[in-house]
Length: 512
Ligand SMILES: NC(=O)c1ccc[n+]([C@@H]2O[C@H](COP(=O)([O-])OP(=O)(O)OC[C@H]3O[C@@H](n4cnc5c(N)ncnc54)[C@H](OP(=O)(O)O)[C@@H]3O)[C@@H](O)[C@H]2O)c1
Image 1: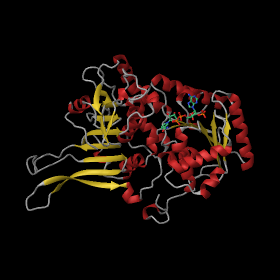
Image 2 (image 1 turned 90 degrees about the horizontal axis):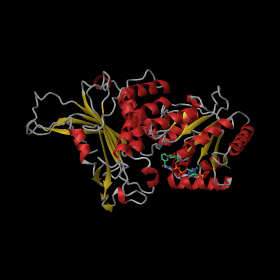
Image 3 (image 1 turned 120 degrees about the vertical axis):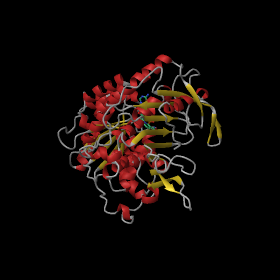
Image 4 (image 1 turned 180 degrees about the vertical axis):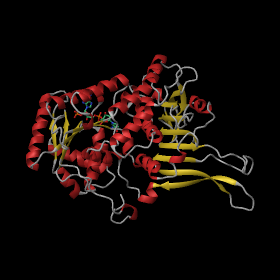
């Protein structure tokens, strides 16, 4: 990141947001997410002096790993995945307080050992320490971990004080409405809602937060942010990769569960919600839930609001790649969608009649996430739509990744002696304005949880509201098997059904 002391736009930013003495316990600490995201996030927080003075990191898992071995694993994760080079002095400070406890996830004795270890840490610190439990395991053991946090008393530590224990729970949060409700019930049997931080890492991305700032810190958008001026909204979350080595997971998930129900729907909620009364967690989450509740049920069957497809063999990045059904570990008759498109209608005063188009897929031409707000065309009285007047609807696009920024398509006069028009794009690029080394989403989210700020996390009722919307689609698709499943060549923007879905209301997908 640009040095705050030097960069003019970053001067005066607070460096300390005041987390109390904290022990972060990672369950599943030998796993992929820990190495790729969590350890680098903690390291970068340390580089930025954002960890509390008394910070301890404890790995927990079934494998017997010595403290020193865990530190070595962590250092190599930083070398491989951190946005900053490993600085021996900074890492040394974290490493000195990094330890490992071996134990099963369904074994209370392991949690008792963990509890004794936390007590030892408190003795060293000389005060009560808040515990932040990060559940970074496959979902099959979320339940046992939650139950054992309850049975061992760790879940209820210091309840009623700001140093109460907290739990971060990874995605997927359930696989349908019933399982999300069951997981919420399990959490509530041990924790109060204020202790629970459900992750959707999209909310930690700079540009997702910038969407809120653009909407509510600028006066020019809010007056036109409604059905009178906005024609339609498109949200795209595209991946260029195929299923890779995650076939086992993906076959049980699919695009709707993996991307649309969480990330894409979060982007929709932030785009469409009413202005909250404040930037407090509950105010913001109340508005997100309200707008999700106003989404009309998705039409299934004939004239459906949905399209689903699997990628077929094709070319991406100049390389021939196999189709989904030919990938290793995929059932030859798999009915798992790798692409989904959904048309949503929001039944409230602001959005009545404005379609929201959501799409996500694997093996698309490039990795890109964007929200595009398309405004209504101006009346063609002065500049009629004919030769020489190439007019495009004004479109405001939030580029979430990569190349984070904001673009606005305007119509401008082409220089010359006659009046001709051409759409032009005005752009703001994060990397150009602020420097390219921006914090990763997990840095922001781990820090917020340590501080006790739930604004960028999903509340229990929010998760259930989202699943309520999509569970009928999942049930319907399951009942149909492969019937209605389309194909799209790898390296394309999706199947014909997605084109029909959007064309039915007179629109076309953008090429982000
Ligand atoms: N990896 C990512 O990029 C990513 C991205 C977004 C969300 N997530 C979510 O983050 C969580 C962790 O992901 P991950 O990729 O780190 O998972 P992972 O590597 O498969 O598993 C993490 C650790 O959990 C333990 N574990 C694995 N399988 C288990 C099983 N069947 N029963 C009990 N313990 C098991 C293992 O530790 P021990 O053997 O030492 O106990 C393993 O090292 C998941 O919920 C995932 O959906 C991951």
